[in-house]
Image: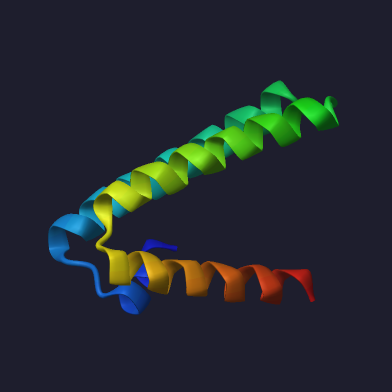
Length: 84
C-alpha cells in the first residue's frame, strides 16, 4: 500500500517512512476494531469511520496539497476497482 502511494504521490524518503508507519497503524487499528466489534455492525461502522478519519487527518499533515490530490484520486480508483 505504501509503495503504491509512493509511486502515485512521489513521496520523499521522510514522507515514505511516515506514511508506512501510518499505514501499519491503520491496519492494526482496523484489525482491533474488527475484533472488538465483530458482532456489532453499527459499532464496527462507527469504529472504522473513526479510524479512517484519523488516518486521513494524519495523512494530510504529511502530504503536500498536490500529493493529497493524487492520493484522493488513487483512493477513488482503488475503491471503484474493489466494488466491481
